[in-house]
Image (cartoon, rainbow over all chains, first blue to last red; front, side, top):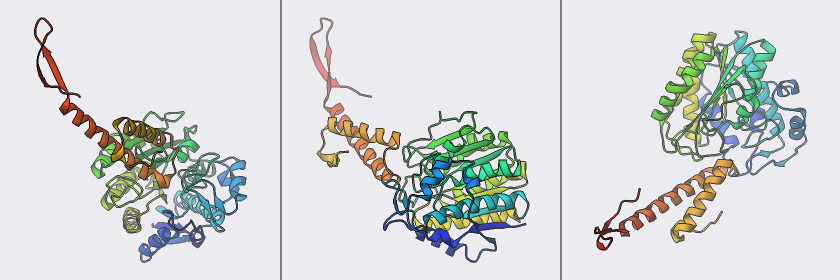
Length: 304
Length: 80
């Protein structure tokens, strides 16, 4: 089988103000670095409100639909193309889940923006409008009848939105590594979910890949293993890279490869290798492109 | 948050500002794009407070007394 790359040019039409780190250039850098990869390239459809309603209330969808052009908060901006870009993101993650579960691809990467893991039930924030990965997890459960989906979020910022959207859902196990202290301030180890279905492993500033790998091996990988997921989703932020301007962790490209392989190992063990990864953060363009390329390359190696 | 340079602060001002910074980081009351700058300011404040404490530690002398309670000598104390 193969690795699917799901994206859409509409995701380049979500334009943030000059100097904003979550820029169009991020996705252009990823598109350039993946241009020669042998991937099953799929255009993301527009996601449906029914998909989003599994995670967010109708009032949130209405708020985003009617927000118009402007700032939703100091971080989070809407341009003329943002709404379509956000719906392509939802369409990408649900399509990726469909393809991997139906066996049309071994695994998949969604090259989308805006990202999603900070968007809470009723609150767009931290560059995010809809909780893409939580929507993907709930799609796998509701549309495909799965019983257990694991989400691993290695973005350097805590996935407060994903945590908020899956907190009460025992069918979803959410694990996150993130720098603490840092935005958004949540993600302490005592935040465990309503059903012990959330695992937060905060990392100290100025630590590197060794500390991350140790945390994964000691806590997160055994917990996902015990959960026995039928699908593994990855919130792939690449801002824990040492070159990233928005955080102080010191990972290198090989750390993302290691994490991808470790998660694919668990997917091989429990769910025939089913992995769907989606882009979250990563703000140094060179580090983002290099890390993302190796992440996708690893998915391809594992999907052969 | 005070924008005063850390080196121009008294120890008390630096501690108070550091507590404010930590509170803001803990509650997420700062934008994502600003969070890293706030963390770095907190780290600078922490280093400054630690240096001030170290300096004070070196100046403080513990008064030792004889069995009648009279001061007989001074020696540096360790403050942990």
